[in-house]
Image 1 (cartoon, helix red, strand yellow):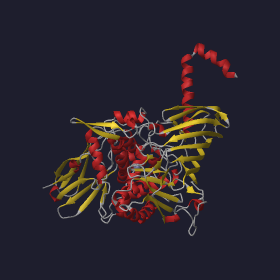
Image 2 (cartoon, rainbow, N blue to C red):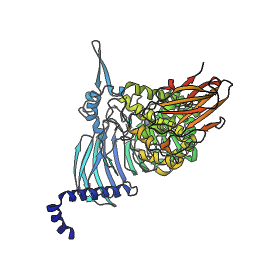
Image 3 (cartoon, rainbow, N blue to C red):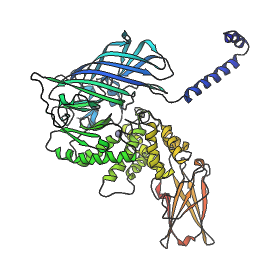
Image 4 (tube, helix red, strand yellow):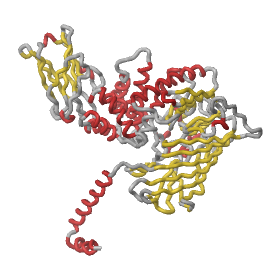
Length: 638
Ligand SMILES: [Zn+2]
């Protein structure tokens, strides 16, 4: 009450001070909001869906119990209707038509004289080939709410606001059409899999500390609300399904899911089966179905059931059989490198249009070479950790899921190879240098849809994201990196970690200050280039002068090889890290020099031996520092 009397006084006499006060109180308000402990929304889905396999249309009912754990009162909510992207004139269609390097899967190439014209496949879809998802009868706690479809988003104005720490129940009816496969989900993929059902249902958009993430479906990628799914899928009895979730009625369904020794006999007039799946603590639900699937179940580490569903194609069956024991090893490898896979089941399913990760499963193409499907299966399995358990936002920070997955994929492929290499990441560095040279690099803070072209997106996300970790091993040491990955998983599983969380984890584990690393590497396109500027004789000793040419700072490992065959290493800590890395190669004597502060362009140190006794000096012999111009990293005395 008192404030109301004070206010006119301020307005009349001290407007500026009032504004200042308002600004101060606003910023305090923000500060307290940022400092509140972590929270996340929760969604419990119940869905009943019936698939008509003749016209690829499906109808369903959805009940969603939504818990608002935020500090905000919500007056609107948003759902994704991904299927609507596959219609002529959609944003996805427009993007295919305007981007310089459209995804080859999404275009048809046509010859027009000497020219090749790329035509959007979405543009050519007929009404019975498009995708759609229509919503009717939307209710909140039994009361009709206004739900408006805008492209691939459903905007819902609530009948009553959802208060902090309260629940509400949304119900709706949906009917959809499975599009001809253009990207990820769809019908009749190029290998003849009938139904790849990803992003097929009305999916609640995520609301987190940053607000709503109701991104339209243009290209990439996904972010969802953590929760539980209870899904009934009714489909022609001849279809075999694989996907997210544990089948609850396996002894009624059969198709390889039944318990050992159970013989499944369908009642005589059975035309359809209703598959009942339950998936706890996931943020997505995908499935695939085909009449011609082979279905094997293999026991993996910790008693996890690994399901393999693939086309009964004599040309590729052998590859899939060989894949099975390999993937048991890879699950074990990831368990050891990152932490235990937390669900009881994972399915490798032939489907989709390449390889895409979903909760507890992947859809991958399966007709290629064993090497090819092994690489894809390993990558997609890796996403079970980096995205499906560590649920980082794939749209905003694609480098966190694609990059970290690529990192563990490269480690696993090397681990499984007959001939192991010392640096399995070499190709990544070459691709990253290539991107920088092209001049098309955009910072990793760019939203996945906002890259000018597809190739810079891919290299930035998969490759530069992977180097974030391999290079971090150089910065804090391999042991500390290994510990960082395990702790990151332990601390952030079943949450939505952000870029700062991986950085803070590395800081907690190593004790190093790493803000500069996250900033320069992920928020700018600054590059690294250190060089050996001069090597001088100084009365029996040698003076070495190094220079920092690139904007991004780094600590320096340096190796000196002498003419007598001996070696010696030097380490120059980076001042802003306040950290000294352990000697990465204890077999070689290491001298720790003074630290090098970023603002000084050069650094000088002395070697106790004469210049004539030196054969070669190398900055970063490991090759794990992404130094753009490696030619100035070595100095050879001939
Ligand atoms: Zn990936």
